[in-house]
Amino acid sequence: MKEETVIKVEGLTKVFGDFTAVNKISFHVRKGEIFGFLGANGAGKTTAMKMLIGISSPSSGSANVAGFDVYTQTEDIKKSIGYMSQKFALYDDLTVKENIRFFGGIYGLSKNRISQKSNLLIEELGLEKVAHSLVGSLPLGWKQKIAFSVSLLHDPKIVFLDEPTGGVDPITRRQFWEMIYKAANNGTTIFVTTHYMDEAEYCDRVSIMVDGNIEALDTPKNLKTHFGSDSMNDVFLKLARS
Amino acid sequence: MKRFIGFVQKEFYHIFRDRRSLFILFGMPVAQIMLFGFAITNEINNVDIAILDRSQDASTKEIISKISSSEYFSILQHIKEEAEIEEVFKKGKVKAVLYFEKEFSKKLIKQHTAKVQIVTDATDPNVANTISNYINSILSHYQEEQNRAITLDYQIVPQSRMVFNAELKSVYMFIPGVMTVILMLVSAMMTSISITREKELGTMEILLVSPLNPFQVIIGKVFPYIFLSIINAAAIVILSIFVFHVPVNGSLFLLGLESVLFIVTSLALGILISTISATQQTAMMISLMGLMLPVILLSGFIFPISSMPVPLQVISNIVPAKWFIIIVKGIMLKGVGISIVWKETLVLLGMTLLFIGLSVRKYKIRLE
Image (cartoon, rainbow over all chains, first blue to last red):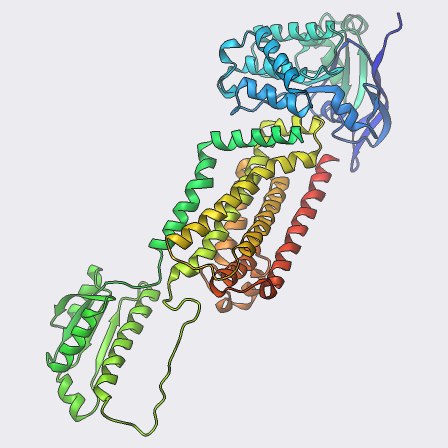
């Protein structure tokens, strides 16, 4: 079976003045894969991700996301990806339904499609009772799930999740990963950054960035064997300290 | 277009669900107009004065009755001793004391000169000055009446006429200023806050990753404020016409166009502020300190620019509000047309383009 590649990165570099934030990184991500993008704070994760989602242009190298070039086709990239930030950014002073309608609207979904999608989403998340409540009044875990579902509204090929589980409890995190698996099973590619090493274990493959370089890239199992560690946490510490 | 409508609708939800912005948008303009229109005034009315009359003769009585019958003064008390003057001032109610010397009438007739002293409480210099002027004019009026019979060989009779605001109503002076302050506040502060709020919440990032282009985002955010500011400007003009009877002598249409121009200037400033501030608080501080203060102090709203020190006069030129106030005063009070205010209009237009250009550049740098 020939696997389809949805993200192709070759020698991607970002330089700010005389500081190289991202140094010639290269990797491929397959369709339907859950790709973990790890690294300490300041390792260059966010910068790399910004280049891939089309809001920052690379200094050199090449990258292709969902079949589009990051230099010339950022508009097409934006249409084919979903994005959720660590802030689960929804509008607190809008209701759940209004948020869905707004985000569906800016992705150009038709009215019918939006109302169909929003009913489906509310049913799946069991939000019937709070559909007309302001998002600001909901617990963080719910916001996170809604934010993730909203990022999937327009059926993107790839979803970029920037530390999607910050500040939520372990049970909610577990439930959230179940949502991620479900989306991946439906053929959506997941590109996720995280600080939680137990979450790294849930990924199909992980890359670990240190000082702008990708120091390791493999399945969690292979990485642990390679570094002779029994947990991803250990692998990460060995890499980050070396 | 559909996306744009959805965006603007969302923006209105934000505004109407936030009591604070609702108050700034609608409560503030009305409150300010009322405050400046009614409370803050340079005119004097029913000022309490005291009389120290050492003569108690025909002339002093006539003068006193002239003063007390004017609407400007009411005589609160009569005092007997010079030493009491300071005391009545200290109590605070009396703003001026009129002190007639002994044998006022007799001296007036025999020596053709008699003295009356006006002592004013100058803790408020403007009021003291006005009081002293008013009393002076009452006195000279009395003198004229007494001298009617006598004809001098040479006489200069000054006739002053105040044009455009014959009754010297301070509300005439404040309305253009208040209008400027409110439009600046609503347009610049509110937009800069609402844009930085999206930055703070992280929703700006989501919007930038969406297929909306950054300029659509900004225009979508600014559009509701243009709309609301126009309503505000209209409300102010209506209030000033019907409540304060300030005339609009020039063309209402031109006034409207100029107001829209100034609204756009302020919005452009607001966008510029939002590009340099990361949080709502910074945006608010910059708007208040960087915009409101110059608008109030350097625009000619309260303090005349021509009496400022030269460096400040030069600086006042870069305050957009200065130009708008000149335009509004011209149109409302003097009834002039575009042929007179075209220079000020061009200055505003130039500033607007400059602010827009700067924000676009800043915005692009941020996106790099």
